Length: 162
Image 1 (cartoon, rainbow, N blue to C red):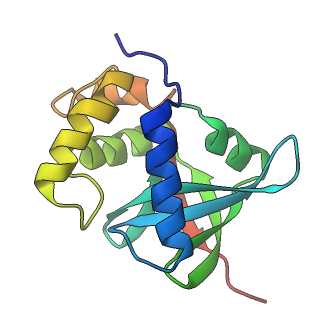
Image 2: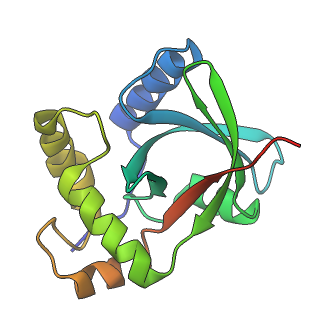
């Protein structure tokens, strides 16, 4: 059974380091800073996230469940910005249906975000992702369909500047 996600010391330090490097304009594999308006405070909140790319489409997957950035993104109707390097892009995140999300989630859990070395991804997946899931990379599509109900997947679309 999957355990509930709690942000611990390692996650806080890891997120702070990645966010700092991204703020400096340093590109780290497929990581970007997601900035979304807080649902309670109304202030912009930044979270480092890994973007999964498949068939030239970008996806944001929540392996830790319905965490704060997911709640904020839903409350903001999917409107957010992504910062990668020195480039900031306004996006609209569209939450996918369970059928579509299950396929994307399964592929992402098997291959990981682009650019991350396989050995690093496998260790990270085993230690920091799989404990929070009720599936493994070899689970059936039906099991992934159940899993995406509590681990949402978003399609990211760029919003043209007007």
